[in-house]
Image (cartoon, rainbow, N blue to C red; front, top):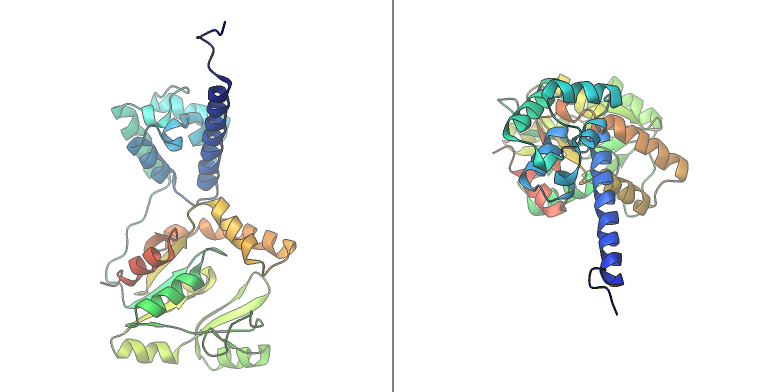
Length: 298
């Protein structure tokens, strides 16, 4: 006789599968906060909006220790100060606890608002493999009113890249000459290997004609543009998750293991700089991200 109180084997297997999937989803979210792909505030909002989601099911202790610079000792002090039980899940926080936790996060990791008076000079930056080039190409194809600036670089062309269309490929001597002549709006050495720079003249001409200009550059270059042209509109492109960023870099297949490791270390540093920018756009869908960026100057 079968005990009706014992769940069928298939049910136990399915329950186990769901539990494993939920743990992995929570682990991925914690990694996203730790690498600053998403902010603690964004994860908290997700948890409160969907209490049954992996974010909502995350214990507040897991949440806090996923934030850089918060260890177990500091976590426990924070919970005591906020009056939140360590067994609480994010999706189950009370009204007062939600307000207090959000206030704590905002006081220590404030999210910046876009600056006023931005110009039609759009600067798009982000971590390696986030898809800046793909999004920029989408904007070029579907928003012809926006001029995509062509950078100069000392690196070799990748398969399919055309000189003068994707980049101006120059040697070190020519790059040095352009710097000395003041022909570059910004320039930087990326990943300690190759140099990139933005020719100034085509940008000045397009802006004078009333056009919007998009610069797809690295973080160092974006900072230089902000210094040279304080009114520039700075946009930081984010990956949907850290795991997705790693998958994109590996799937690209243009770097060896050592280079990938170096780029991922750099990406963590770059992600930490996102609040220097006026806007943050998630590249979860190329067409959607491109459309969002194209409308920012409006």
